[in-house]
Image (cartoon, rainbow, N blue to C red; front, side, top):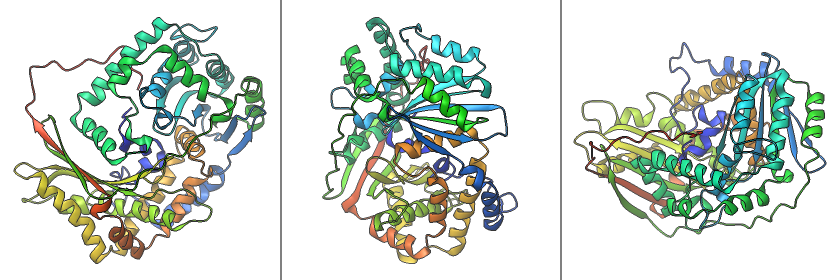
Length: 488
């Protein structure tokens, strides 16, 4: 799992389909549903898509059930509203380390036995940690739902392991950091960029943790984090698939309802300090190519029932990102990566639509051979300035909105994505039909709104720029091998 800030929103199927990342749906008009036909498909499925049911168990745990009877499978997820942003300096990475430790035993299960039991049921399982959340999932035949529910409830309530087991797994996590961050110059740059952009927000710390904190982490650091945050009131069970709502509720009450509640710690506000001017730095690391990243601080979407000005701007910024980089042949692609005088091998834009912390609008690029990072930086900024001056066309808006409607159709075909989205909406304290509401809201964004946000949020006052300056690569150095037990 990528642990730098930019990847967090990709966890939701809705955003992964094209909000600020290159869309994966077909680019040909013959293969992409028209807005009207796509809307009709969404409408035909919307009743089923919105048939989720939410309950609160007596101990405060949330239960969300979404029936989908097209195949005899089910997805069972446990979401915690706790992630890297809930850590403190000195123990960064503990949320992710604890996620690993939940596979290492309970009062009745030996290390690794959880995974072996799920595999024996014909299922697959894994887990993930982000800035905002921690999640665990199993996808199994629907008739084995109770088996995995019993297993998950047991480790949620009774997780335990030896100090020696912790020390062994901590080495796996450290190797994960080496492979995915320290041996990846762009990941290192984004880690440093977050630390420059955010001064007071906990988003400044990496999900995987600083290596010095991992080196100093103790078993009791993870145990304390577990006792503090793994309480029913901070958790949601999400079940989607070929299930009966009443039966799932009865199972949840049987296996989760008896877990003793504990008081949830009070979360103190950690508002990001206002930026007072341009920040810029060079990052030197062994690399084959240079890289440019521009991070603008922007508002995030906080509510959908009554949109406030910042909410409307967050939606318009998402449309702007898609106009720049939402499909093959979008503005950045045409202007910077095509033709004989192309400036970039690649260029991208993305907007952080929502999250528990502050959000960023990103522009990134890799200079083409013979082109400078400075020239690419200027060109990236000019593309946004051009929108601020000239606006966008209705054809561009129609194109991105068509793809979003199509993505909504495709999303409904995955039971896993349905469960994943419901959990993510719960974590963000958004309504469980947020996906369809966001699509509806995005379709209402006008060209004038896109032009206005392009003029409003892209000044130097809110900008941090990072340039990766390539250093010689030691090609004789052996490539690291994946560590045993690496989960993500």
